[in-house]
Amino acid sequence: MEIIPAIDLRKGQVVRLNQGDFNRQTTFSDDPLKVAQGFVDAGAIRIHVVDLDGALEGGPQQSDLYGALARDISVPLEVGGGFRAAEHVDTALAGGVGRVVLGTAAIANPEIIEQAIQTHGADRIVVGLDANNGKVAVSGWTETTDIDATDLMTQMFEVGVRRFVFTDIARDGTLTEPNFDSVAVMIQHGIALGGVHIIASGGIGELDHLRRLATLGAEGAIVGTAIYRGTVDLTEAIRELGAS
Image 1 (cartoon, rainbow, N blue to C red):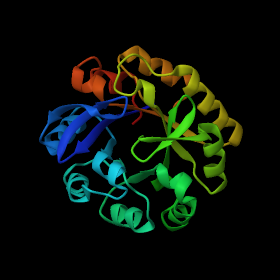
Image 2 (image 1 turned 120 degrees about the horizontal axis):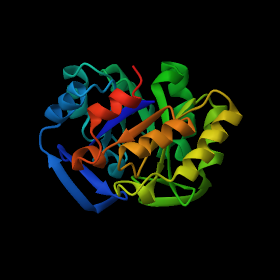
Image 3 (image 1 turned 90 degrees about the vertical axis):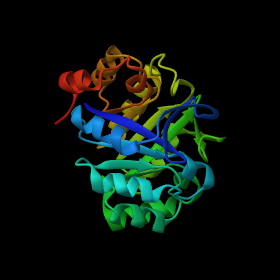
């Protein structure tokens, strides 16, 4: 399983939110490059980056920053936050980002995702399934729809998406544990569709949580707060579980 450390960017700083709440922010660094390089030194083969300002504003706000990260570190970035137009995707990928993650666009403008896959290939396009009690949330998690995460996965599969990041918002940043039942449902739904990869996110607080996600069949796990708080040692996790 791929262990993917996370860097959430807000106004140029590395932060973490609790349950996606912008009023419950902890700032960990004002040097994203240093943080990213530390992850690379620990053995990470990919880094998950979120432009939190972009998620709120509906368009990339820190493209210069994550573009610099993409140029300056030796592993690919998986970037989300505000990708709601075709040109947002094109610019990020042309600037060196490895993958883009789209969430709101999957509901508001699904044709953008279909176009992006046709232009860039399915390997470079990821859809974020961010859920509150199984219902998809959008616009930086500030709005919850009445759409089931499994239904959205099916719709996106039909336009060519083959990789999803599933986040249980209630667990995100809490360190309590992932919602293993929900993750299992998403993985099994992906298996039923055929050829779907699930990256789990939210609630990871210790190495055993990662072991359980690997057992469930997650392709990857995004780890943020647990690394910053020191409850997961990234080097140890990659050594035991990480893909190479």
